[in-house]
Amino acid sequence: MSETQQFEIEEKSLDDVLVASLRWKGRYDESGTYLGKLYKSFGRFASGKPLGIYHDGEYKEEDADIESCVPIRKGRSKGEMVVRKLEGGRSVTLIHKGPYSEIGRTYERLFRYVNDKGIRVHKSSREVYCKGPGMIFKGNPKNYLTEIQLLVEEAIE
Image (cartoon, rainbow, N blue to C red):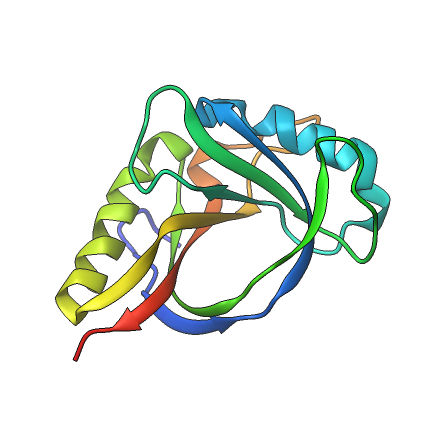
């Protein structure tokens, strides 16, 4: 895919999924540390792409309310790592290709779409890390793929 091509916005249904999660406050670039902790405890049960839930409803440089999640087949909560059902539902999604530092422009495009369509979305957003840095090799940030998901609250007619 060339740099000028863009992914299309999709409206789709997300299934419920069992996740091991860790909720914390900090900077977005610290997410890898928390995902690493989850994989250390639950990696053998992993069954999907890791994701982050951003609970603030707005961009924050520091002290962001973040929940790192790893989809799993089974497992039990361990201390601050909680196993729970992550609810699905109707969503509006868009894939961002490129470094995380440039994801803001993709959020802008997605929010412009929901505002133009009169779609009310939940405050929290999700990012599914389809292709990103590995545990050992960083990879090329220009090739990272992140699916942003906004869960629909209700449509305004």
